[in-house]
Length: 266
Image (cartoon, rainbow, N blue to C red; front, side, top):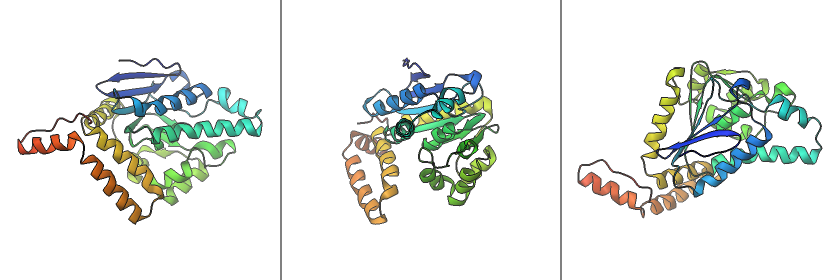
């Protein structure tokens, strides 16, 4: 099955949706239109049973070069404050849509992964890179603050406050080696193996208990603002709900029969 979005590519096979920005000649920048269409696609994802995991892949040797200089940066310099706030809220809505899409998202980044592209990778649940991947939060390079699309909240939780501060103040590139050592990248593989590694990771997740995965993603995000006591109670409630699922019963029956469980997401 293939979705037909206007501003990015989407292919769905085996419960895995693979997205790619489709301007490889420009290193896949984002535009006003692609921001909005990606936001709407992720917003609709909780209601789709045909997608169990998402791979946000690269195209032409690069992941994403951020906001298009001519299509976005130029027009922004001529906008009113009201228009600018509408834009920054829309870009933040893409991150919120990814966080709340109920499905695990895997970023598979090769080459350039900067600006809003780095944010998309950051907002994903899991991240795979190549040795050639260069990641930079470039916002100060264009005279802006590093606090864009949730970076000051999310990046320190992934790589630590000091490292995040350095990247957000300086806008310098983080190498793939640094990113893996700091916990930003889950895995670094040769470029020729990037797609296969991300698809394999997605397939293993998609074969699991998808209702349980939805609950895991929900708790990972909600517990940021909870006390430890609140988090433990929330997880008790979440796990009790999961124990009502058929997948939980299937897993038990398979264990008794010494078989591998086949989960169906209900």
